[in-house]
Picture 1 (cartoon, rainbow, N blue to C red):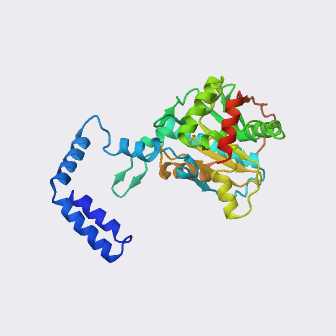
Picture 2 (picture 1 turned 135 degrees about the vertical axis):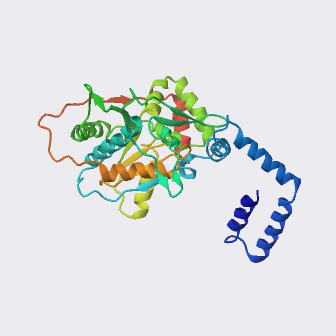
Picture 3 (picture 1 turned 180 degrees about the horizontal axis):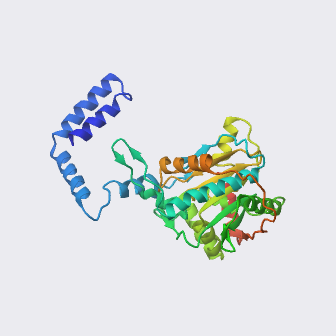
Length: 341
């Protein structure tokens, strides 16, 4: 208790003027001597000592700060990283393919347990949150959301979004992992198929108030879209191929963070974003991971992904599936409402 109150006092110093700081110190000293303070401390220590409680703060933190928070995840929760230009990539789909390969290489280190824990001067950091990096998704629900995870094995898929349309790409075909060149070629076909086609931009629903999104997700399921939702939610991660050419730093940040909201699924913890002018970045959903694991992910993807030096003489013509949504009038109206936010 004394340590907690001392840290609290210290945290107030840069925030309060002298008179209010002195008043706060008096109130804190009075509280420290009260029976209420010692009873609360006793309850916290009992909670921390409970074998059924992995961490005394985790449940409260996740619930109050994230899962129970009802404002949209964009812009209130999610975050983004803007990448430097890659001099070895001259085409957007070339860069997207490289990012996909790098992310899957990192994912494999989690699957096989070879990823070492991060360390500080005081020891290793907990790696628990890596369980929610890939093949995971935040699910809207009243009064509080939850996180769904899917098995790594059998879900070596990514969802590619272009022009508000969703495509499911299996990265293992004929028993072999796709090469960067093969991924690039299939992305070219996805872009060619998606451009020039207008659809109801269902992805914007994930940018809505969480209660509204929970209701609209139920409408999607009732309309026969359970399989489409499952494909997105269980996928390893999302790649958004944005149809924009950000020039300024501000334009670039907005493009990576949220774009126009049509070609995103903001509930996924990992979304790689590639613009038509080859600029790229990462958008993360914050509820089950902070920036430490995802920063490690993107640094690995950027620094350790090999660039293909030779072209395959006969790359495979890889398969992909379009994820199609049924959009009855109630869903169309919900999308229109969310798009106006």
